[in-house]
Image (cartoon, rainbow, N blue to C red; front, side):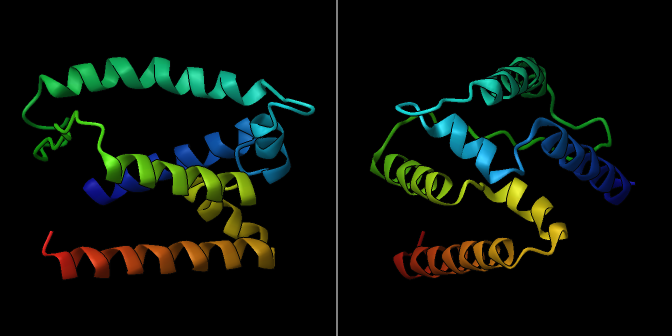
Length: 139
């Protein structure tokens, strides 16, 4: 049952990314181009995600188990530290250069474009490097 729920959630998320235009790098880069021809349409997508996410996290934080019976695991960290700021900066730079973040990049793999596959490979390589550094640090 958990696998079916995960598959359906992923499918719904992917369709939402396609419908919202988040899988179109030109649209994303237009949104990020504040000094040029700014496209504010993705701000509505983000506002919609926040409007759904905030109440959902509020409700989830009060529960011990999910609707399917799995243990709830909500992050409790609230501190803004150097690692968070640097990680956010690296994420933003990658998003600004490529027009993709991880979810839309994975959905866009279905397009068959080599550029998308290269981005996903670079993203996975970055995740592997991060994990190895974290293990070496003992974190």
